[in-house]
Amino acid sequence: MINLLKKITREFAQAQIHWGIGGSKLLNFYGITETVNDLDLLIAFEDVKIALQILDGMGKRIEIPNKSEYYTESFNRYMIDGIEIDVMANFKIEHETGVYDFQFDKETKIETILIDEVKIPLTILEEWYIAYLLMKDRDSKVEMIEAYLLKHKQIDLGLLMNRMHQGIPIEVLLRINRLVIEVRESMNEKELESHPYDGLY
Image (cartoon, rainbow, N blue to C red; front, side, top):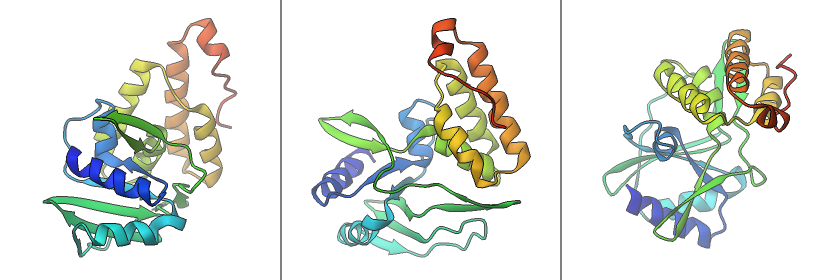
């Protein structure tokens, strides 16, 4: 899987595609889970056409079962070197009060992890925390991310406060708020000064 990721990274870098790893492989890179069944790639919508052309040359597109909770504008699945890959652009999730937009474009910040001199781009963990809260049957992943954020006392408050304006269900807002409070309670005074927070309301 790592060799395939490095190959994709090199090809996408050459084409100047803005993208990032998400899903269980992202959690795996953070040491949150050891279980990785497939790869999730988020692509800036402006770049998705070129990205798909590159992947078409590397493997085979396969049929995707319909999932009514997803409103993703471009959703393709590939089998490459025996590994299943989901490729998404304008990733959106339907929930009880509306549709959540993952908001990944050319301006979206990413993290990177260096493997064998290859910088593999990663989407932001807090984005997946919100996404998993909104998806069905993702409780275990939500709990693992919460444990990680609490242990490492790191959380992107700006991102969370920005995303709350998307009409997220109240119970999800309350859970995010509780996590932020718990993280802040574990911080010292200096850390609190660098993480100002007035609540999600």
